Image (cartoon, rainbow, N blue to C red; front, side, top):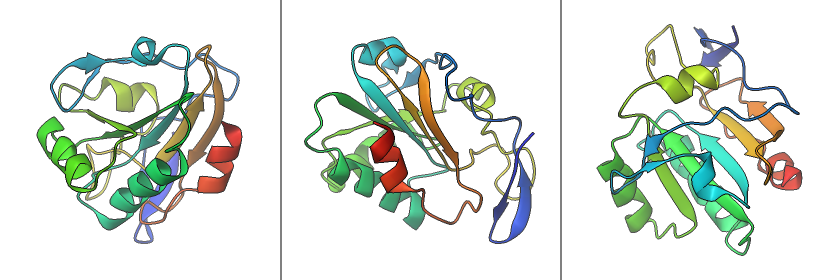
Length: 165
């Protein structure tokens, strides 16, 4: 079980991120149009999972914008932002922000993804949301990079994630 902080206060997560070199756990999450998406929907591409508590917070919004900008010319990468936000809100955010390279996926139909990826917050004010993490998965479904951001209110290491692609 991993521990991170939120504004300096300890927060427990349900587990650990998948190990580098392991097969990425599959998932089924609704997109902005309520269509279920999983890893197979992005077969043949590298996948960057930007896991955030909510796009309705400054740091989550910033990380999504930054990854969108950094990966705008990468046709070989699927950028997935995963949060507890409703699909409609995620779609509206991406539309307003003109984020054309992001596939927004919601935990609306269950917490299976958050549990399988070890990022479900189990204590504190944000219990039920996810910690902030980045997971890079190669074309074969193998995890090649992970970062669990130790302070939820801080941004991930963009350069390291991009380099892992």
